[in-house]
Structure formats: C-alpha cells, structure tokens
Image 1: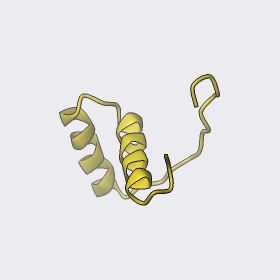
Image 2: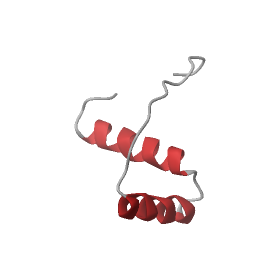
Image 3: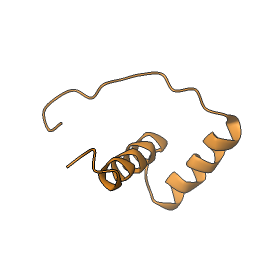
Length: 51
C-alpha cells in the first residue's frame, strides 16, 4: 500500500482490550493504530495470508 490511501473503518473495542493495546503500543513507541496494524500484519504473515 505504498501510494494507496489506507482503508478506514470503525473498530469498537472492550475498554480493557483498548487499555492493554494502549500500553503495548506505548511500550513499542507506536500509536495504537500502528500497533493494531503491526499485530494484524504479523498474524496474517504467520497464517500465510499475506506475503
């Protein structure tokens, strides 16, 4: 997705999950959005659904 605009969508999360992601993102020096995208990319790679 180099020059493509990223797809936007609304994601509702349980407050406890959001808080855990917020801490994890801060620990990794990422935004929450960046952390979620990183986690999803890694999961997709492991499942061989993304090159």
